[in-house]
Image 1 (spheres, rainbow, N blue to C red):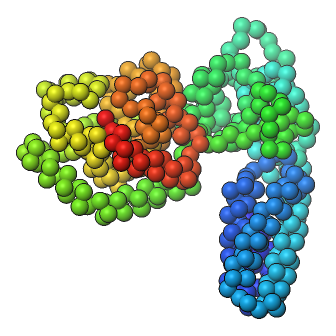
Image 2: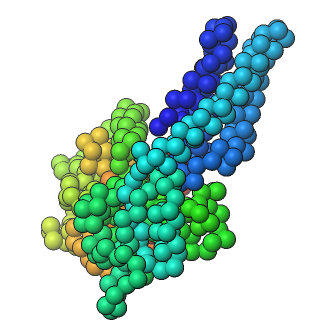
Image 3: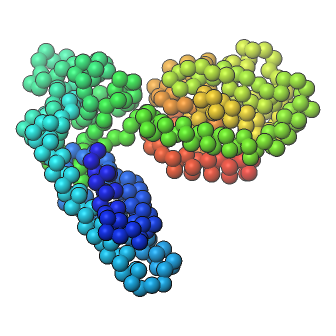
Length: 431
């Protein structure tokens, strides 16, 4: 919490001496803080050391300073101006490193005095988990208070380690122990079962750390004792990440409605000429947290009855799809009314595609990871769709791609998928 403000203050320190270079100092501050954030220099670490961060810190400082210096050189011909500006940047960079050293010492002191401490549960009770527990009890500098082990039910009547419960009680134990951190270490259960438990609402609020199964894998320098650990990204979108995604959805959907209004009008006219009234088609789909909502599309065919509409899987080659409807489906233009679903908050621009309740129930029973797609809002487009997984393609593959998207979400990933979606539309890659 201290690091980012201290970095910003250090980078703006040249303004205390002179305001002559304030645009460059401000640009340097913004660029450096962004570079630090994208490089993981504001992420929580268990092993706190300025020496671990120093190579990445210096490299990003130099890169940001070089960019700003080049721009300043192009705008100002005076050597004296550039020399003063570079001196100011150098002083700011040195102060950033000094500030980092101070904040790291404060963090370490607060942990050792137990002023800052988080309850931690270790998932697993094998040798690695036991060693982790010993290190946490012995060394408070990691900022974690060991609460106990959680593992699968075992036929053994006694355990040499303090197992406080079983994995099926994990959500309740997290609440009772006021746990803030979970460390995954050699759990005695299949990975799909563990992932399903980690996606429970009460568990997703915890920070997740894991011991790599192969100790030779890179852990970005973080470790507890000699045991490497990696930070697991949040398994569901919440907090600031959810706010960023929702804001981007409103901006993109609102802009798309304005820009695409002529195309929307043309599609409306074509749908009316093709089938008369009933231009729009609404159908119940399952959204975030399993909540139903009505999706809106341009009507491309008329089903025989409501039961068929709810339970028929694919109609790609159905003769009741008119030529106009086939064109709208091929170009994905029939999906454009879902922009209103996005503005309402039923959907997102990018996310797992929504499915009908009948198939959600069916696929969730057949594929354990399918229901995990509903951790986030469903989307107008998604990673599975732009990867060719639409129509009659394996549901297990779709679920795998959708869950990968959720667990690796970023605004840049959304931007990449939108660009790929536009390319698919122009290639006519719809149904």
